[in-house]
Length: 225
Image 1 (cartoon, rainbow, N blue to C red):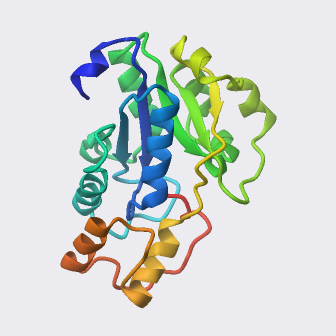
Image 2 (cartoon, rainbow, N blue to C red):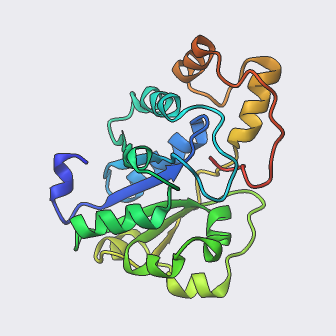
Image 3 (tube, one colour):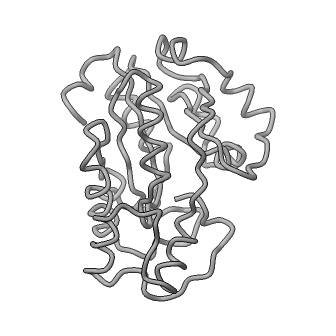
């Protein structure tokens, strides 16, 4: 975390995922949430062992390297490798609990796609989330509606109200759409060795290291990151 994170009035914004590979929709989403919340830094946290989805095709080191390449032009975006260094499954609740203990009064914001919001009631210890973080939700085509229990646990609010308290509110952004899937990108790379949804530096890294050369079926639970 950066020195600015010692200021309890500045939100701590987190964006977790496998980032396998990181693509333009990830970067656009992170930058949009930063802008909506006063230009605060956004920390992209790659998972080591995602517990509810197929394991990443690229190694932890390669996924972190691609993230660092993709965020280079954007000073508001940073990486955090704590989940890669933690043994066992990458439970989001562990990261939220750790950061809340270090920053008791800071607004803590977790970025989600609308599809993830729709399944939040299935996440490990999700009922503990409202006491730990806010949600910043980005639209995704075809996402199902969240269950009422989740909507009630995170009342919708605006950016100013969200920043006035540490946790428990939901900010709904109207753009950008999370309209790209990493699994579709991997398939394109395997078939055509190119994809316009990737940063040029990330694509060059993929070519240099021979990543994503084997066709992988698109799996329903591997669509967002």
